[in-house]
Length: 482
Image 1: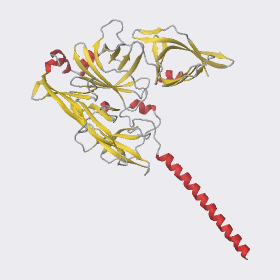
Image 2: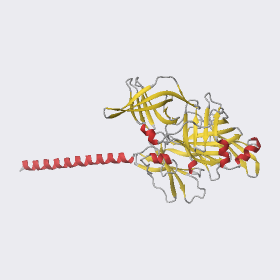
Image 3: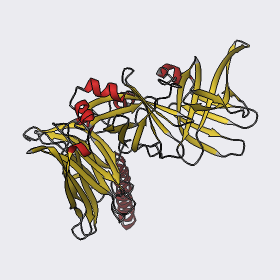
Image 4: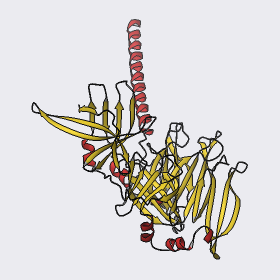
């Protein structure tokens, strides 16, 4: 009897252990599932076709908002970005409030709490921008410390320039570890954030007309104040308007946007560089061409807004549609304009070239417009694939990215453009790190062999100049598609 009782107890204990193991494994898989789904982020993208229409059409994945919005909050766009460089992306919601008479665009910052495994509102950052397509966001270190700033620029309802700066300040005693603190917010006919040689921090200059005295202009200089942790007004000067804007330019600025675009249309160059920079405004063709001596980039114009000093333009790269530039043009004289150009937030492949500065009208008869054309997406996609040769060179084209591996196993990665010049295709390769930019005339050949098609390409090294491509004389590269 005792023996049967012992066997019975042993069986009961075994059953209990089996159930415990099953429940434990169930919880493990359940928790793993929650962790994977709770912290899934996708690449930065703008939704609802409001900010980056081309990016929206290109992407099959929509970024989802993880925080609820109030009924009065109209969602205009959303993107993800790592604000505090902790390998965890925050979400920036661009909204407008229905009950807000100013119509200002507001940025709602959402952060993920690893401990509670939930999203929460970190901050609500109001901008002075009212025109959505002019909104430019970027992160930059602009003060004499390592703290980053969120810089918000754009136009208001009066087409005035606006600038709002929030500092991302560490807060070690809070769950968020960071706070966004307002450091500057103002508007004017001209608002510029510049890095002068005599200052460790960026300086802000604001220029505006005096309503009571239309012949005068107030010029303000704002400098960074470490004690108050914000920008403070350092200098204010009242000057005669004709010292900045002569009567001829004033008449032009008071005319229609068509007359201003006619004045700016054409090629302008920046002389302060060792290698001159050229910008070709082609308003009839709705594009802008950025050129150095040896290459060009084509941007489609997304929007043009007239300002009191010139134009504000947003444009999209025709080959890499996630790249967007915002251009502020101020007309200085009959033959000079000042440009400030910024790239949109959180994109790879940003240009390392400083396009900002004063440009002079290019009167040479060598080139009146860009000689390069942009092919269709179908043509660009037809070049996609992996190409090899017997020398160990491998080229992978997967629009808009490429990877080039030499025989020495040195791999190069970046973006590529396909351009057309005189019915010839140009392959323009832009590396993301280190390597020198390369361009080739690319000839494709398709041969029928044993009931199958074999595709090969021939790459002829060139330099892309203002007057067209010029062969460098380097060895031609032949590759076969795999």
